[in-house]
Image (cartoon, helix red, strand yellow):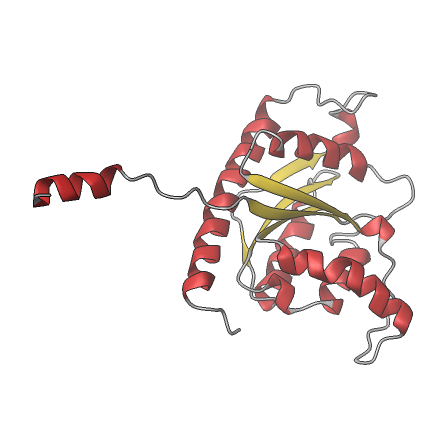
Amino acid sequence: MDITTHVSAQVNTPSEAPAPLRVAVIVASNREGRFAPVIADWFLSRTAEHDDLDIDVIDLAGIDLPTALSFNPSDEVKALLAQVSPRLDAADAFVVLTPEYNHSFPASLKNLIDWTGSEWHAKPVGFVSYGGMSGGLRAVEQLRQVFAEMHATTIRDTVSFHGPRAHFDDDGRHKDPSAPNTAAKALLNQLTWWAHALRNAKSARPYTG
């Protein structure tokens, strides 16, 4: 085989497709009468268009961690952590669905973050927020600071819903989906770029924190 044929054979060899990205979608609200399931269902319909994503929904309404932190938690708390920590650790990326309560994010989300640690390291985090006039953006701005402390990379573009109940019909369908669909596409494009980049980087050189 001459060098021309050899180079051509190398160029035409298809590369192995990367493994699907594991994305944990965290539903932060555990409030009675919450609107979170409507937002979550809408966002999951957007992720369904991405064949390269393996979605794991972590609903904090079903994970009742205590607010009192401990270095020696009870067996009950250890069991709760065993339900959620491995799922966070297995994720390549996160999307946090958060409302805004009193200019901030829910205690349930902060509690989850405070009970965990390295599960977030060197991974991207995107945000879908909702609330009143602010659309939850003040909660997101505070979360960016929190996730920086967790060695995570937050995605610049977000999806936000201002007064969300007015934008969805009784069946949970968005009445004018063009703008939010476009925003979700931008978020997912950025999230997947960072997730691939950081996963590849960690496979070449483990992140030590």
